[in-house]
Image (cartoon, rainbow, N blue to C red):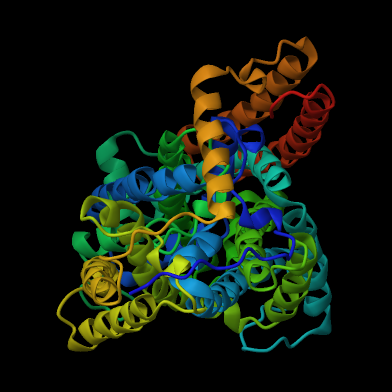
Length: 574
């Protein structure tokens, strides 16, 4: 089949369509912060409680979550980050090069909706904490029942929108500040409620051995029995859930949008800051907090929302953790949604497109159904994007090895790659058919779906000409190749001045003070956990912890922000 050279478009190319140059890349701290900030988040309250209601056992939680999250880290490190660093493109524009305009637009619309709803759900979670301040009742219907809740959502949502429209730098800086505090608060919240669980199970307000901790975990939190009184999920389901929870961003390659800014592909393993701190420790801590609060209030865990759990575990600072945790997750997902929308309306600036998407997100957040249906959405969304991730992986890595022409569809006339479209649709059909047959756990369906789609795409692409084409790069392709080659040379030959450590004394002192406030919170949480001899001292210690936690929280954010401003003023990395 003859290849016809396309004319170079005279329309100005938006910078989002071009590879990220090296001088706009970031060091490891940005990615450690952004993953910790996003994944030590409001969803942890929801998912941590979910394992309790699904009836997982304590041993399955501790072992299964570790294995599943390690698999997720390997997926980011070996699949997502290398492709992102080699191309320096978002998935949306790289898919455009592979699958053509038609398929890519359909996929981008799907991503706009997915990440919009995820962001809306997180804004709703944050608002569930703020409602306490105004004595607004819990919103249990699919629609809002109190106009004040709508006003709260608008206020919370505007912060998310403002952060997201200013792009990666603001998002990373915001997450870097929030991440350490969020992690400490989750751990501290679990620590101060362990005596409550101990009193319920052991008849005493303290634990002395690891066996004591496992005993209260197995009897009051992860009992192995679900909410219906039946045998709960096992270790394979726990592993699968932890691995599949973020398939849309790692195997589905959505996080190419973040890792295109990485100086090295090895930064993909920095997702460990999110998986181990957030999807391991924070999920476990959230389960303990939920179990403890349920005992305090003498109610079922399913009757509590994140605001309830955070407030009764952490006091006034619990309001702040739910708000901040919701913001950090909503920010990252609204940023992704804006990128997908900008790939559709490529002649519009990303900030303007993200603002419009943000307004729609805030409106959706006013309806609590986006929160109550969050987990099913997350699971099905992963299965939706996995076939596309398989197509991109196959074209990027496998085609050159088997003699196929990479980007072969890009050099042909037409706006759509038929093999890509068919592979995506049949891949989805294959995955959901397996689900219908119930041949395996839903959490593992992305694996056979991925391989099925990759093999199908190879067969169809060969039939449509990928095997025969020897395309000559277009002028803009040659330009992009030169940018990436220059990028590679610069990484090898030039030491980036931004990698030098900040020698200013004041920011270092401020950072030490900020971290000290976190240690103080952990100290008082430890006193509550280990030195509450009876219910009276437990109450006193918990009250002291709540007061200290609020004071330290305010100090931490003030000091961390001042330090950040000084570093930015000195043109130093944050």
